[in-house]
Length: 223
Image (cartoon, rainbow, N blue to C red; front, top):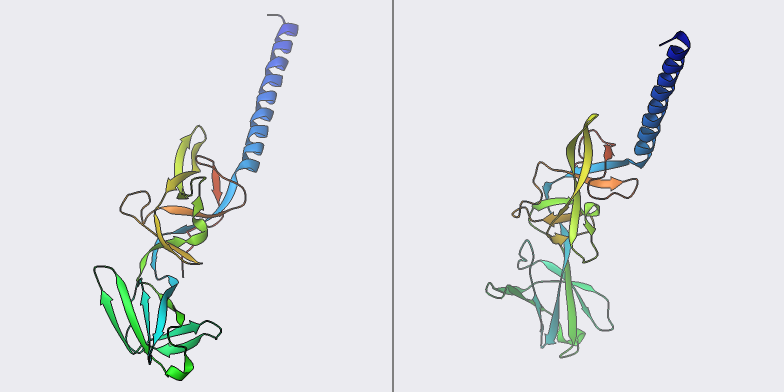
């Protein structure tokens, strides 16, 4: 190979490597743009807040109401808000109660002044209540598919030619109780575990297998 041909070959080789470098740079640049930044959370045991509600009827000097309990059971003396048609909600203490374990039905009684209520009037009774502690994740980490099934994104490591990278994996979960802050999930099916790191929020849309970047060094703790 003469000197001129050698220079031409080396120049072509240099152009080729420069082109490959630029292509790799552009590819990584666009991959970086497409990589979602995420905050995370983890499973923790937590109480949930829910509103216990039931229907009742006025009979003589008592109101009898029927409810389906969740979490902590009501007790004699606990106050509930009682509302009859055309009146405001007023707090009344439970005078007595009984529980049917087979039907999981709670019957509560309130002592009243018959002059304050119309005989046979229908009432609604409510109480804000805390549940027992369940395995929970933040409610906004829960998503729903087109069929209405609940799922979350968990963080996994994946090997690549550049080493290890983080990706999100979609996992279906069973949510059996939820309030504005937390969602209680079933761990018996093995879909997620207490050691899983779960996507709480993403700055762009993500799908199963997408690469992600963590914004927080550790999973956000539920308080």
